[in-house]
Image (cartoon, rainbow, N blue to C red; front, side):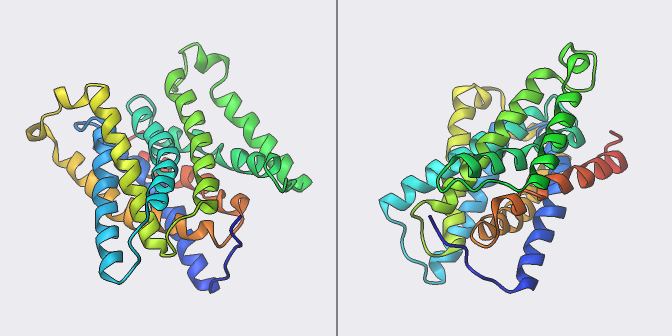
Length: 275
């Protein structure tokens, strides 16, 4: 298991601000992006472009060439994080409002703490952490409870449960990315994980027939702007900050972004999209 590396407090605060605020805004960007771009194609383009830019920049700056083991591990991590985790979000936002999507994804800290508890060396959470997790989990159950499961609420059941399982996939990918053998360069690691995950998203898009009904000429300005925002801010800044923080702070602390994102997402969804 990798040891956590120390970093200046200001850098850690800046990285947290990035995933707290920027990732909170990406839910609205995803909503607009998938209006005229199929979800898996959109997600694949986002991460392939972002990953290619980071890979090229890292290699230009002298980063080592990734080995086969590096690529294998990056594809596995990208599969859990970007296909399973982010893929669930982009697919579900066809049916679930952006604010509620962020709220459902806030179950992530529960998965992070549970995984850290059951895997060696079995780090048991403090009592206060458990109480907070239980209350949060109860809130999620209420949100997707009998009324909504029956189809009478604001959440389509399939979208809700895909998001919850996607959060589990993201948690697994977070631990795998932290502990796997990957390049020393954090930017290069992020780049090849994006390339691997993005390629998997495009493959799923092809297998589900998205390319057969995708017409680039029908992509709206709102979708194009949303995709560009996701590439530049959501991936190049946000995802890079997240991968960097995996080596610097505990999973439970890192997972707190999932409690802040819904606040940002709900406010932006209300102000801009009228949710």
